[in-house]
Image (cartoon, rainbow, N blue to C red; front, side, top):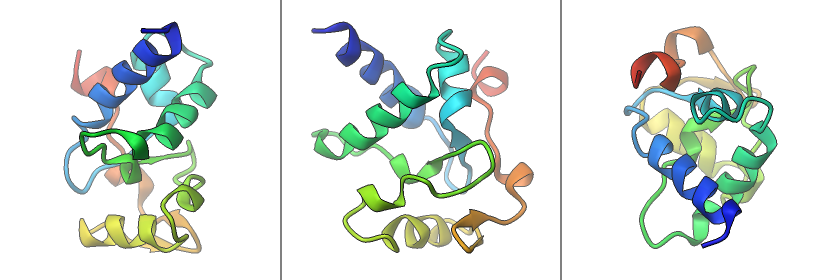
Length: 111
């Protein structure tokens, strides 16, 4: 397994732990994994997660401002929003309302 694949697997394991109705950011995952500054690699992992044989709740990963920057990787730009709204997360103009209340920090929650 390549270094990227093992990093992606670590990202997926964290993402699978994000609770229903909560979201986290690419940077928060990178920070938890000890790779601060690797938010972009977390994004690449999320883009590749759709090919995983195990469901990865990638819709729960957004940018540091609560924007749905990965929405175009779900087949339709509305799917990510719909998945979040199904979990009670309000999204307006591609941004999560009350982001701080929905934010789940793996560094705090899993340490």
